[in-house]
Image (cartoon, rainbow, N blue to C red; front, side, top):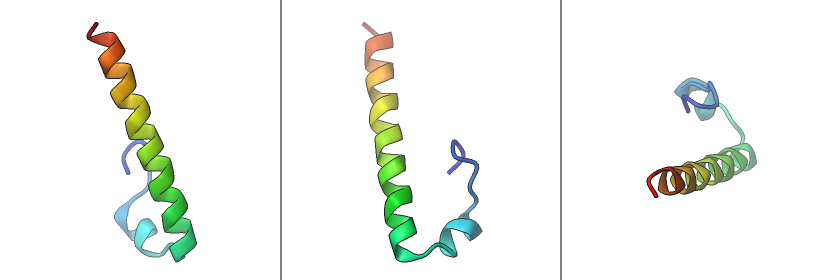
Length: 42
């Protein structure tokens, strides 16, 4: 939420399909961050 500058109220007001897109975006971001952290720690 913090990275995308969205607050919990905004997320609560999303349509179900919008929430699905948001969750997909968040998962992708977390995977990329994890990869970046692993590469940084090599």
